[in-house]
Amino acid sequence: MSISKSSKLALGTVQFGLNYGISNNNGLVKKNQAKLILSQAIKSNINTLDTAIVYGESESILGEIGISNFHVITKLPAIPRGNIDIRKWAIDNIYSSIKKLNVRNLYGVLLHKSVDILGEKGKVLNEVLVELKSKGLVEKIGASIYDPKELDDIENARIELDIIQAPFNVFDRRLELSGWLERLESMETEVHIRSVFLQGLLLLSSEERPKYFSKWETHFKIWDDWLQDNSISALESCLKFVKSYSNIDISIVGVTNVNQLLEIISIFEDNDNKITPKSLISNDQLLINPTNWFK
Image: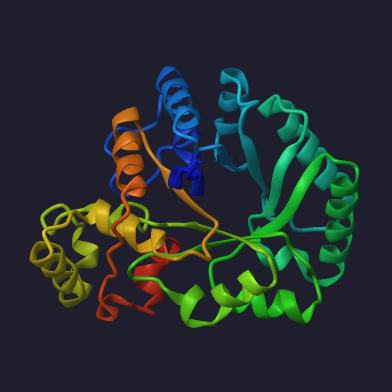
């Protein structure tokens, strides 16, 4: 019996709590729609949910709907500035998440800022997470990174993490080119990737793209022409690109309705993979890091 390829998908839930994504014209996902999406996800063997404390009401909505059939991953926010009790702060946040999500334990707890695991505060934080893991409240601990260079610092600090979540898409291949994608596989660290569609930017037509991105017009022309020449949609290309990497354990996708999810599942289950040209690779932080957009 073959394993469903969709089991390597995770459902991102930021849209359940925030109006998120440059291509999102539907706004915040309503609770009844979120329930339908979750129902379809579990039917399609998607059993991992990605959420975070900073995703508005996402955790509470998930808990109200009921998600006992899913592996749930949440993220701790950045450590507040000032002199705080790190241990109490971390424990309070994690127990609060468990209560909101209405689950007995969490599959994963990630740090939204990987730098928080470093230094004296990081040492305490790591000890707390390891302790909660030993108690069975958390199965795996990890970090969400923005740049593979962050992994160098984590390695130098001799901190062992079970999960690394990183951006990865047809424009942004830093995780692979840095050598870290292969290294994480050899370390048996789970690799979860986000920004498969670069927050939806890669799905926009040339007419739909905001003027801010006109400075990369030449780069986008390569993308648009390649899609046209290969008779493939942007959605299909983005998904088949990440699916071609066997050392990616989970690809996180966000949707605002069931039809979007079904389309993604259909593409992911297809046996054909499409490798995009290396000319699409960009290291321009103003393009590949959405936190830098429109500044």
